Image 1 (cartoon, rainbow, N blue to C red):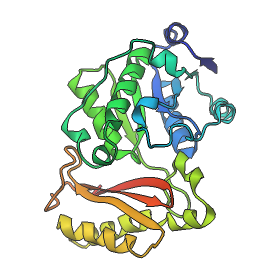
Image 2: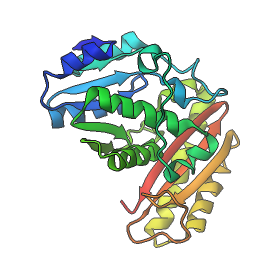
Image 3: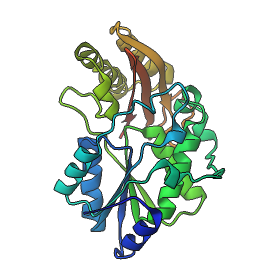
Image 4: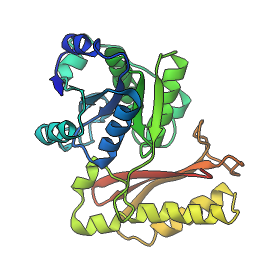
Length: 278
C-alpha cells in the first residue's frame, strides 16, 4: 500500500493501474467505509482511498476542528484489507493560495441538508470534483447513508460528463440498527441508546408503506410520532421525497421514495434514510 500526500506523486502512482476504484473519505474509518473499499477492490482490481477532512464543507459553527481523526489507525485498517493507494493531502494541497473556484450543482442542493447547512454541498461537490480529476477513477463508491450527497455527486458527474461510474452502496448498520458514522463517536452512552430512535422512525414509515400507505404526509407523521417518544432527540427535518429530484411528495409513486431525517441527540447531529419500495 502506497500512502501519498502530493498530487504529482499520486498521478504518477495512479498511472500503473488500468482500472481503479475510488473511495473518498474524511477518515476515522469504520466498517461502512471498509465495505466500500472491499467492493471497489473486487470490482476494479485496485482501489484508492482518499483521507481528507474537507474544510470547505463545514460551516463556521460546525465541528471541523473537533471532527474525529486517527490517521495511524486508518492506515492500519486499509493495509489489512489491501488498499493499493491512499491519498492524504493537506488543505494547502487541495486549496492552494489563490484557489477561488467552486462547483454548484443546483436544485438538489437547495433542500434537506442544503437548507440546514448552507454552502455544504458546494464544498462537497468542489472537493469531490477535484478528487475525480486527480484520481481519474473508473468507479467511485459512496454510502447510501449520505443519500443527498449521493444524489448531488451523481448529478454532477452526469451534468459535467465525467468519465466514471458513481456507485452507491447500502448503508452499514450497527447491530441495533444505528447507521455507522464517524460522528457516532461523539455520543455518550445514554445518547448512544437514544440514537436508535432514528432507525425506529424510518422503520415506522417502512411499516406503513408496506401495508399500502402512499400519503407522504402520513408517512412523515409516522416518523415524527416515533421521534417524539425519545426526549433526548431534537428533530431538524423528516422527509418523504422523490429519489432523484428530492422534491417532497404528496403521494408516493409506484417506484417508491426516499425517507430521510436529521435529528440532534444531545450536541450530535445524526442523519439516516431508507428507500421505500426498494
